Length: 133
Image (cartoon, rainbow, N blue to C red; front, side):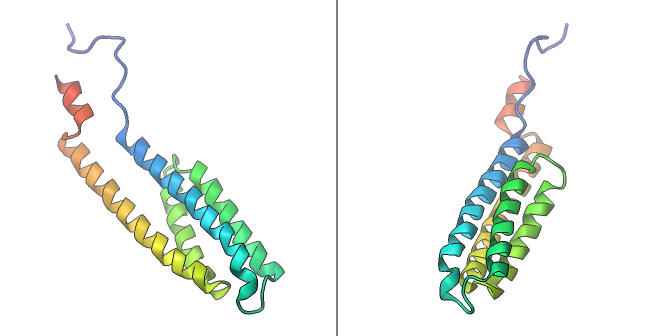
């Protein structure tokens, strides 16, 4: 006789929630990038076709990357977009500053993910405790 009933659902995957936070952060970040279009005319040569295209492409890439966070390479894509956002400081200095701010946010998220993975490995999560009973 097994300790788990046959119809009992599998415990939730905590990493799924973390990937959801990653996706939400990318969506918020894409909004910030699109808002940079409002300040682009005030810097340098103004709203050139190249500047508008790069900023729009970055925002679209972030939205697409948000949908790809369930893939094994999704996190790497998100982190690569952080580098691209910081590099956009050439077009809009304020966007580069926001890129650094979001890079710090991503650093915090990666620490959260590492802490969760360690707790999972030790079996300390509440969902793991319930399963053992």
